Image (cartoon, rainbow, N blue to C red; front, side, top):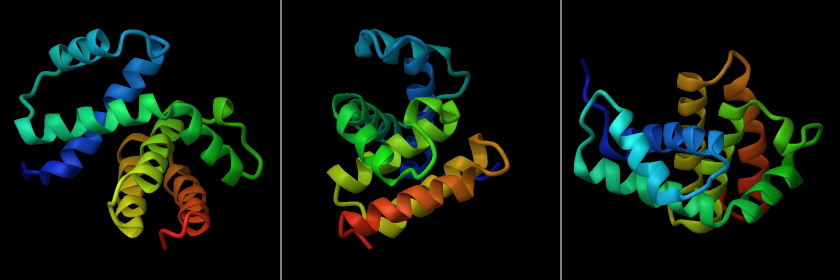
Length: 141
């Protein structure tokens, strides 16, 4: 089995954690994260876990801003009506575009890979379209 780069693995775990936390209505982030980590069968390297938690905390803390940014770039979809996986991949990507120094192209490429891994057949194109528009409007491309 190939070893994933730590940041990519961190993003994968962040998407899984966000999906799990959304099930709980994002209530009690610390307990939700503890439950998430204890539910995994595999050990996650410390750096990947730290990175995942930074991303999750950032998305949750800035969720209103992130959802508004996604909604602004989404032409025919309300955020709450999007598929849960797509919505959380978009939240992660939008957070990174708006609140981190990660290069825009890296954010979009990672989000497309996450959509390919966890989403439906059309997810990568859907995620790419919205994040590309968001990155351009935010001056990140």
